[in-house]
Length: 367
Image (cartoon, rainbow, N blue to C red; front, top):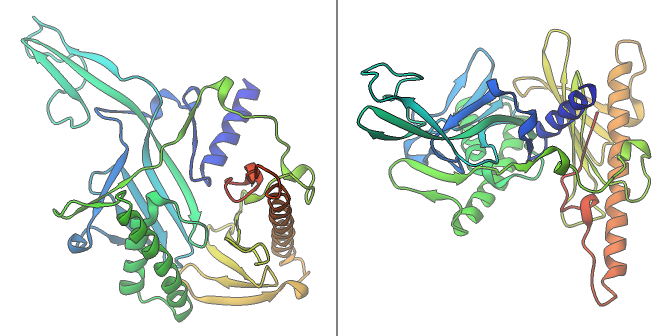
């Protein structure tokens, strides 16, 4: 039981930050499973022509909220615009189940939940008997950095959230410049999805996009070949890149330069204090400088990595940023090693892929 709890906690932590979650059905409590009459594979979002009233600002939590029209997904974004959280209903990998809801001869007495006003049940009724065909789902919640590579499933709702934040929430000049860059990236991805036929505007105020399909695994199949975490030997070749560093008070996303091994990686740090006040710290020039941004997008301070404060009140923050720089350097070495390996392999008859440590992999979550 102790081992099971540890594995379950590791999978849950990974699923919070990696775009393709691992859904181990044995780890999903019965109380967290929801019954739907179809397997959900897409979400329907408000179209640009029907945005009024669909997207709103949660003033209590200082969040922009983008809910899907069908209630199966939601995107929220804080006013600083550097991170976003998605929640969506993921189907469990199993055959549909059949539930007998009413027996003939019981009159109007229904043995389980009501047949009417239940959109998540497909019913077959004959006389006094009714049967419901259902599929099990579980809600998945994930948090990403806007500066990271954008998943196809969230490109369109993120574009809506960024646009709303840009136009309606009076962002600071710093946040406005960041939003302009992020909007350009999201718009380019949306255009590519539309051209590919994966994003469909139905013309009735809704836009359909595919939901992520979680990697379904049973306990014996949940893991691939043995791999050693790069935390066991930072900087060692073949250990793979780190994607996220997590502690109880901070989350650090490590961004990997695309297409240029000589480009510098950057980091986004979400920091929470004892009063649950949050700030974002974004690196520049490969972690040489760190810009602190408040909850509403205001600039608080800028630190130089070579001159981080060492007083008692700032020591933990300085250690956090120093650790992030170490992992940025580790990722640079891994990226360079992958490029060298690919170049050497391409001279032979067959070129090898990057494997789990290259850009095609999702990276490690380090706790």
